[in-house]
Length: 512
Image 1: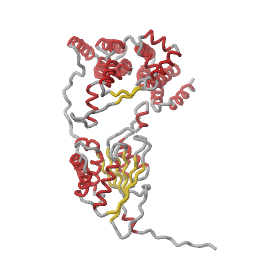
Image 2 (image 1 turned 45 degrees about the vertical axis):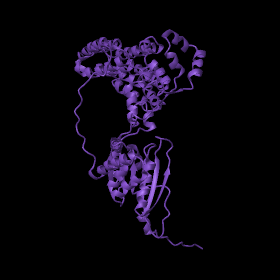
Image 3 (image 1 turned 135 degrees about the vertical axis):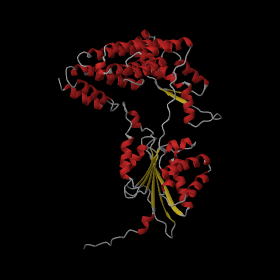
Image 4 (image 1 turned 30 degrees about the horizontal axis):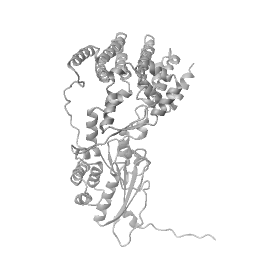
């Protein structure tokens, strides 16, 4: 016998529940923001429940905080523990890609969701790992948000908070109040901040900035007059006089080449010295002599950039130099909000491979050690565990400062010998095709983009660089040789493993 079960009519009071989702990355105060929302709701006579589902780690997944609230009644509802797609009234995203993630997950719908988000970026691990520019397109996310949300509040909430000496949770809370999505007066939100008792004044200022943005929209950007150009380099008078001579040489280059040459010269001299800058200009002028205005100096402008990058390679000396410079330490203190009375403790992580250690030896000695597996194994045992240097201490800082000061010795190292060999071979191979295919020569110069960083990153880049440059022999004589060289390079930049590059190389080999 078949039984027909009676249909249950949904309780209409469930429609009175306000459902709010906060998607926040670690360190952005998502938990504080959630507690403020709970506090203001309960103070206004609402029952409330908050839950959270933590992300895998700081930037591989945001923590999702979920709040349900309802005006107090005789019977309290059974609140859900997690949000459901298509059933969210308010979505607060603490970063631009979290705005996009919320839309993809279906939390934002045009019939009901108020979307409040910050337009600043905190790059995800996947974006940082990409060999090329892996940064996601924020404009696409904004366009999707304008379609997906019923009401949209977007601004750089992080900047608004930092300007007031606070953190982003405060400005987002202000934007929530200003949006009118919750039926509470502004004073109730401010009381919730005061009740927390921590950083109240700064939080209230950031709250006000977020509130104003939600009510009036972001302020229009004003054009700031660029400061007068100043020399980025400092040094003894004799070196500065030589530097002025180098600047005069660079200014004498064709106009399309000049700006990039000046930037490249500054980078190379900062890396080493004026004598090294002279070598840079010698190499660049050799390229200019083979170029012409007919091609709008594309070859020379490209060479100006990538010769500088090749000459200013990342070695242990360079890394140590950059890590001990005063502007970097000042920037860290500023980012941490440290005052004169605060002590900042700084830990640097170093994990040099045996190859990096050998590369710091004199050229002949380093070559012998690299050719001896037993010696390389010894270096791996001695240095392979990595080091943590607490550079706020005198001993560790002096150690790094000493390494960073070995610029004069750098020219004698095995690393410099190897880099010079790579640079000369790259330039020779690129210019060898100049007479027959100008565009291909330009693309081959651009392949130097694949070589960057140090340690494992540098080794992977060199492997890809060699593979892409080697494809020139297969492409010579083809009308689309330059286009294919560009495709190979872009494929090499897509993923660290080189899967895309392998596929593109198989296609090129099929041409033969």
